[in-house]
Length: 271
Image 1 (tube, rainbow, N blue to C red):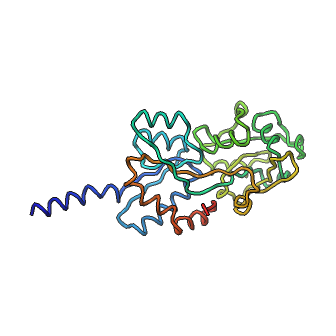
Image 2 (image 1 turned 90 degrees about the horizontal axis):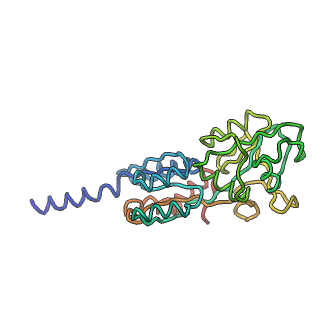
Image 3 (image 1 turned 90 degrees about the vertical axis):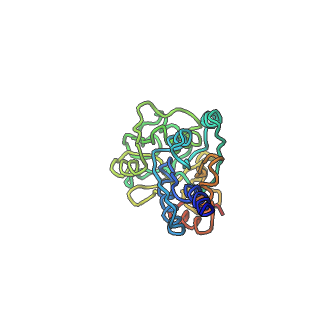
């Protein structure tokens, strides 16, 4: 009887590593993680994986606080975030789950087909205020951004604005869906979203990083062949001490089946 009790206790101790996992963070990664979790739970019926958004910074803060097992992030962890985790005795591990092309979008009625990186910098820092300044109609430019907790906000600032500040009073949106809706309904609007969020309600424009010599539109093909210039990894972060708890899910995401989900959602696979 004693041996049976010991075996039962061992099994109960193992259950948390199989059952409940929490993933939190990047709104860009939300549909991907939800799809992965759904597929993973079908293969592992005893597992429960819950996925919530809030932004990359929110996910990494939750990892620090111990309220999530995995932080999903559309940007690299910051030095001060890593330092806070280390100060709390936590060593963080990083896994690239997929890649994403960050698309610049405008209202479908906007005749602009392409913009240079320098023009985008001017628009989002407030120096360029009218579409006629970049070859468009005489129409006020209304830029939208994600809010500051968003990894997409951070990545766009770093890659496109070259770390210059967004214009004062820029319209910030709490989620990508709100960006899509706002741009689709506002004639002079411009913003940026992950590749998987593109739809017929907005228009993606070509981007040039060579001063206007070549403009490349975002797609799986242009991301994979390296011609589209605004590409980022989509990342999972977890605490090394919790690796046994999350490893099965992480391995699933990296598997052939998990990477098929990446492709189905509209992001770019690792291979």
